[in-house]
Image (cartoon, rainbow, N blue to C red):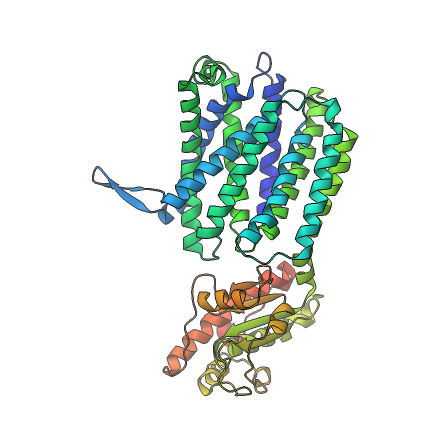
Length: 487
């Protein structure tokens, strides 16, 4: 998530600067300000050209559905992704348009847009019946204060009817997009989420260009100019570059939102990155082009918006301070018991070599038949075959999963997607801490199977446990392999 937010931050700076510079007439090689509706067609074309380049370079085209067209199988978005793409197109167009209105700063529009989405996030989570902590509602209050303080500078700016309408369409686009995304994606399953990403990604710029063509056909003069005479000017290249820059931030932003955790967790990462990039872009244009600096009220409002981000992030920050990793399976005598033992053994080797605070590990089962049962013989034999010290598992006793155990854990690693979903449903408010141990797929239960099935299961769990420990501890916590596994 940190790298995605950083990528969004880096992408947003040139995008915001290009839009404001072009619409203000300070972009080198241009002759006077360019209206927002005039530059939108070229920007849409820029993104439409950049989109397939990214999808082809990443190889993610393979996740899309296929439809037969003239005897050829071509990528084709499903109905939900197409609808979400329409909402995303409204967001793309109005985001660009919002920065082009004369008399308003980048930072003011950012505050209004970001503050609005910070409010939308917990509301959508509530409508989707996702648990929303009190911290999210505190953030809503901070966001309202931020917007109110930011509007205190409105006497120094000109909030036209067009600007207000554009903001309203922008927020409506997010409501619609979040509703579809929360219903068909955000599953934590790579294939499902990537398919949604690719199909929505392909549909959004196509929808945007279609809507702009429709507007021009209905007689909107600025859109007509954007599709005709403007495309022959040097400024058209700058407008196309806006679309290319938006393509980059669209990728990072969508991947942030697709995180399985609720919007009240994902939105702060996105909003914080864009607010900071807007601040950088605003003052860069002050220094490079002599545009007016943001008003003092906007800077104060930015502080309140960041307070909202911190409030929404509070549960995740608190979770990072917890030091227990919980492994969950069905009976807690094989898979989760092996994972706990492996994690305990790896950490026993790792901890003396690092300054990382020692972690506690535990395991539990969703369908424990006999509380206090020892680890299965097959699991014990598999652990011995991997040189896991007996001290790591000889005292293991099966226990059922409880809400208290889950809420006191930093991360809950489940062996299957069904178990992950069951834990998330049984214990609301875990803020995305419930994940699959192996994101590539389910780890099947070896109970009652031959010894080689236990050994294969143990090797897969060991590889996943090492990967997860590296994720949790960071670069300094690279986990060394055991003697036999390394050989």
